Length: 134
Image 1 (cartoon, rainbow, N blue to C red):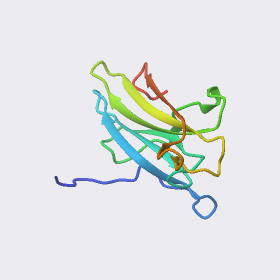
Image 2 (image 1 turned 60 degrees about the vertical axis):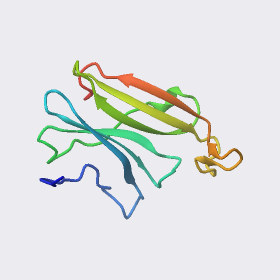
Image 3 (image 1 turned 180 degrees about the vertical axis):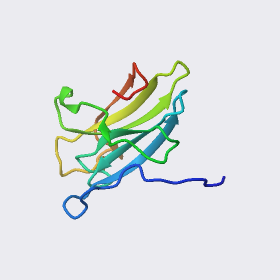
């Protein structure tokens, strides 16, 4: 593998004010050449405020659109942190597959020491109608 180019998809605009990192990146390329990047932005690796975001590149990854939150978590009715991956489908749509951990107690990590698993969660999927940019 050879690196031919590199760029930054997300850069915290005010790191002196808020700790915001992007992690769990995932890329796919639509049939029109647009690159779609999904990733989580949050204060820490298992942060209560982690939200899945998406950005688009129309120039082969040299520049990226501002992050857009992917999941409207208000419809869930409970506090969650969420993580989503995207893939391009042959018909031009983007499919998003994700999971959201219930964060009713913001002082607990995702790992559940009582059962060796994780907090209760939900798994979701969605399809774009227009290639994913709206």
